[in-house]
Length: 394
Image (cartoon, rainbow, N blue to C red; front, side):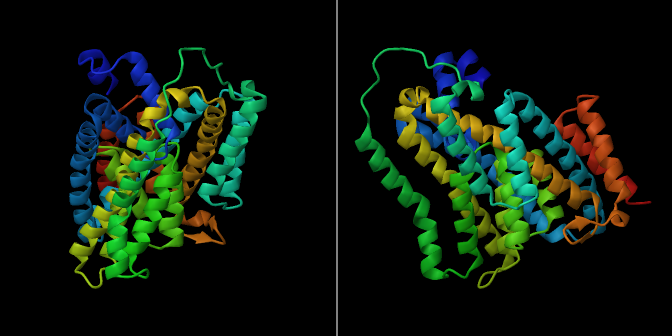
């Protein structure tokens, strides 16, 4: 995006791009889609923001929808299960790669490393809810930034020209309008199907996810997997890994894995619709409540970018949340690893005799391809899928 928008097309300057990128880090939800929306807004107002944001999402959403339909009907076939044995192993290696990459970038002080460890223990040992961990970390960072910003490696805020006026009126109008757009399908579901229907559960859950998901798609997965698998029972841990593999191998933001979850949840509890219709409605509702908030955040708060750039406490909260996200992703890696490598659990712990040697072998091979040979995501996924097919014959 930087190469196309800044270097080749010159639509925005380097400083404008970096300011917008920092701004999108402050917001919950998928940063890349928000940045694309901001670029459209900067060039052509709300019409440009709609065009850029929608076209960033729609192609990937259609691809994931088609693959979700295929998965729902073919998941029980032998060759299909063998294919995804390899994909799950590749996903485990990819999550570990993401963990190491983000940790290397985010944990540059002792305090940040401590916050990451605290977040990991909170989730892995005490099963605290993801929103509590994220919001608690943000409050810690907010407080520390006011007293000891050096503990979070915060840079001094530069002095610059006078700030623009506060656009309270347009911000309030935008929040009201896009809040109504965000809520519209949920109002229809409530009126026609009621609170007990799976579509209401899907919309409510992913709306909540849109508000608390700081730190990118891998951080989202930790919370989503915990709730979708253990809380709602919409799908299994292995299927969650399959969905991430599909999202990794298709165009569009990785957060589109949420649509896969929404499709399967509605497909498996379709009344009063057919499974196909219910699945499509579940996928569409998930996509709506995941991405409509992005337009709300951008259109409402983009005029505040310059002011937010100078908010030291806000930057401290973001730095602390980013550090905690490393612990969140570590808990995700542990959770995925256990469910990919072991067939059964006892008292919350894996049964060592149930270790799947094929999954373990494929995970080690995928790790070698990623870390030693520096293969890309798609070649690793392809090799792992072929490896799963081959090992299923043994």
